[in-house]
Length: 351
Image 1 (cartoon, rainbow, N blue to C red):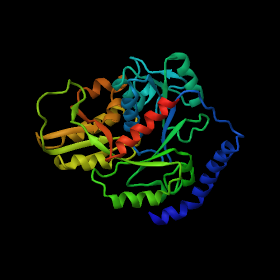
Image 2: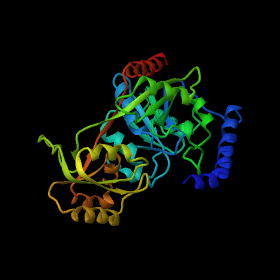
Image 3: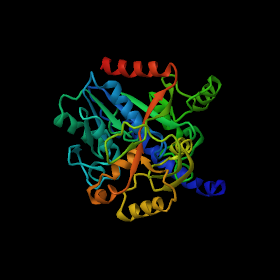
Image 4: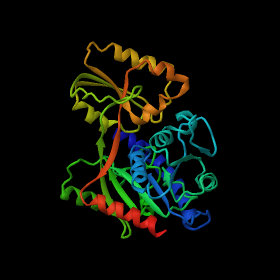
């Protein structure tokens, strides 16, 4: 693996230089960033996915609404449509993307929008939902045509950007120096118990600028829920003989670790990030699940993957499978929660 990384490193330098030149053009104002006169919060990362942006966007929505009227704007990665769309009852993951449909199903009072061009998207929000008071840009750290008032940069505790390299030898979308644009750095997916020594070590490794605040978050898992029926009031089984997990997300390891605590044996079927499921995929999943010789077994996926099963093209077939999903939220360590909430609310209230 290290040998392959060395071979690809020259390509990473070329890739990093190309993105570096683009950033320089924005810094020199040869390419323009538009700043809006109301609060715009960007949530993004340097790496190519897998840092936990979706639950952090959801955290912000819960924090801000009410009292503020919030709208989210995503690219709508993996959708089969283009342009500006406001999420509605007829939409699904194929029309607006898996993250936006998840936001829409959870937060009906929140405006959920998609547009691959963020500047145009913000303008569209102002026309479609003019009472919007705060816009949250999902996965927009590299989309510099909009200048956010507050920029949140996420990095995975297990894969810090300061230890990584640009594509293709690493997973970074640009050089590490791009982190200087952030106002807030959040170390995500950290252990629930984090020692002060480890915390200080990571902050030293990240080398934050004077204007940057560093916070640490971790995943809080909810109760396993059936996808196709109303949540049961019956207490779920505490331990299973087998759990079959299928997922199409960038980093599945935290969920694997959680599910291993709930079963004797965990089987995993991995698909690419943002994978759009087909009838053949569902046949494969069902066949593997049916081949497990046990009554005490469970078929599980992520909440994001569950949204992709709501596609009308496969939904009839999917409803014949006993799919469950594991909801997740993020929580902040100790005093980080109060400090982070205050920083967000002070920024929004000031504007």
